[in-house]
Image (tube, rainbow, N blue to C red; front, side, top):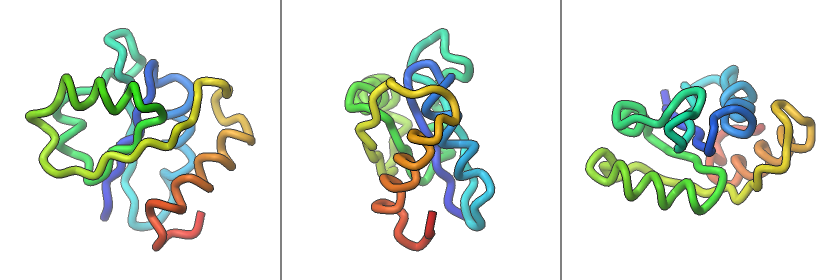
Length: 111
């Protein structure tokens, strides 16, 4: 079972969409969190250590993750999808973009 943590700023649009899209895929256990302190599900050291792979939506999320949780990052793969905050929750264009960009990083799965 591969554990993947999706991260955006508020955990309201992009990362919860990614969590919902990939939740049903066999062999994956997914969760999502936000880098902001007032995020719906704030990023914690426990979530960081839980994940085999951390997928951030923007470079700023990777920077915050590395700055705040450097000690908890223990060789996890951190991937940036470069998806701007221009989409609504479960917007079809966002879903397709997430599937396309994730396929590059998890080639064993056909999204």
